[in-house]
Image (cartoon, rainbow, N blue to C red; front, side):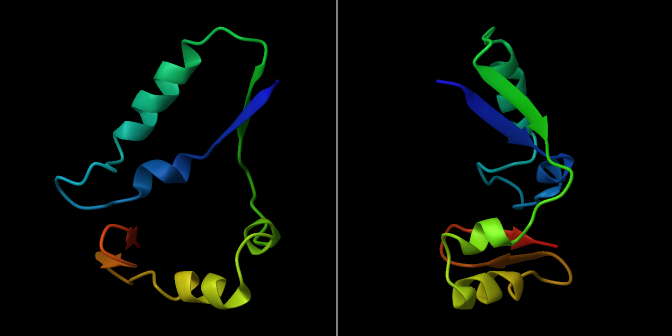
Length: 87
């Protein structure tokens, strides 16, 4: 089975605050680890554009709007106890 890994440069801009395990530094570390896997069944794609219709295939319009309205103008905001969104 072939696996496609989609990456984007924006993921390293996701600020979760100090001490949170989802730090921006984890992304390059994960990518570097995956790139050590020498397999023709691994395809790498850089995301240039993402259409919201793909999110809406698995999430309601109400949920989609809630998430989009949750992004703060500055700093961090919590969607729930452990899910952080940032500017």
